[in-house]
Amino acid sequence: MNETRLAVLVALSDDGAASTAAAALRRRGHAVVAAQRDEAVRGQPDAQVVVCDLATLEVLRERGHGARAIVVDLPETPTAWRQALRLGAADALCRPWRLAELVAAVEAGPRAPRPAPPRGVTLQRSLEAEVDAIERVLRELCAFLVGQGIAPAARARALTATAEVLENAARHAYAAAPAGRVELSATPRRHEIEIEVIDHGAGFDPLDATREGGLARAAALAEDLRVTSRPGQGTRVSLRFSATRVDLDDGEGLDLSEMDWLSPALARRVLAGVEHGRPGPFYSLSPALAVTVGRLLAGAAQRQRAERALWS
Image (cartoon, rainbow, N blue to C red; front, side):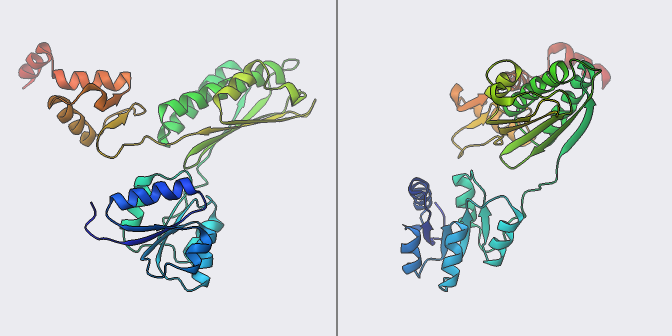
């Protein structure tokens, strides 16, 4: 329960999102009114906080509504962020946003919108379309995605699909000539990864590109796969993967199935929960983390303790 009770107006075009957001804020003790855009513009002058999209906020500001505003579903473009700043939004959330983020933004007090997510962080590589070069660039791509915080399941899908596309270029684009070059780029966004592979080889008619073979397998792994190709003019394959980051829930449990390691704080929390008899399903652990937690619970082996005693 929040100590400060706020009058909140939720004005969203999506009725389901509006009702869910309103319910979450009411559970925190706030007085919440959910309204359509026209209703919000006509009334609710006493609202201290408004949760709405960018277009609704613009209309509200034109009508003189000065409440602190949380913009949701903001497009991830510099123009949209500048518009939110111009309209005096206290915070802005891009889709898909989480209820916990929204509640925190409503209760945080006045502040400027967070800076736009970085859009220039891109891995770009040019490689020979041959096996050794493909393996090297896939390892480099894996390290890049780890560094960007992309969870293991999303990394696995992205790397597997990219391997299919790169091998397709090696086997088919340059099948009748010495291996040519392939251009690879990977750009993580806030909630997705965009990967593009371009070759300058034989090309093909893309109408049947994703019905069977490597491109079909890549299409099964990606949220979106697009192929642009013409005979003799090379091929461009664009892939998009959902990459929502690892999420901790509301405190009743932890989902660690997508994490590579435990921070010291998380290690202490998990160990405390297990040692105090929490039920097994309370934690969702990846196999690697399950082994790690088991080792932490067991402590050092007798031989290790003896060796440490001798070292000391």
